[in-house]
Image (cartoon, rainbow, N blue to C red; front, top):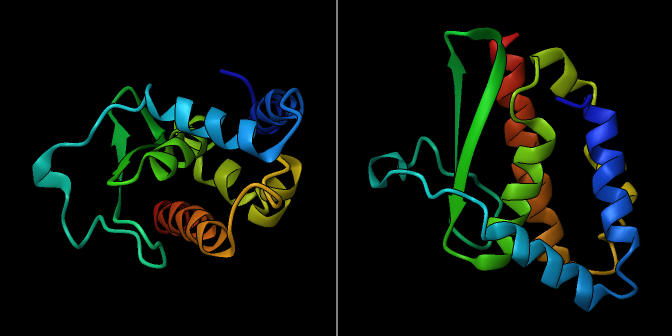
Length: 141
């Protein structure tokens, strides 16, 4: 697996190939197609991410074969947000808590060039998801 910085760079490079915000949004929605839905039983208040306009659930877990790492799964009732989740899982899932906490969410947002593509509400939701991922990492550290 590529390092977290390399993964962010790869995503930024993919977005850089897209000339305008409409194509970037389409790409984020395309990423949603690869996201596996979570179980209905996991759509609980405990797994719900606060601060998102859409309903978002995020599950964090450890795997016995790699107990030092955190793995995330998530879902939403909105296609664009599902794409954002897929993007965040690509960056953060399968990482150590230290790796996750080393990332500045604002810097990720800027590196990906999403500031012109997302509304303020969507941006706040993305930050809420990143903050939740980092809170899970702090709890696991």
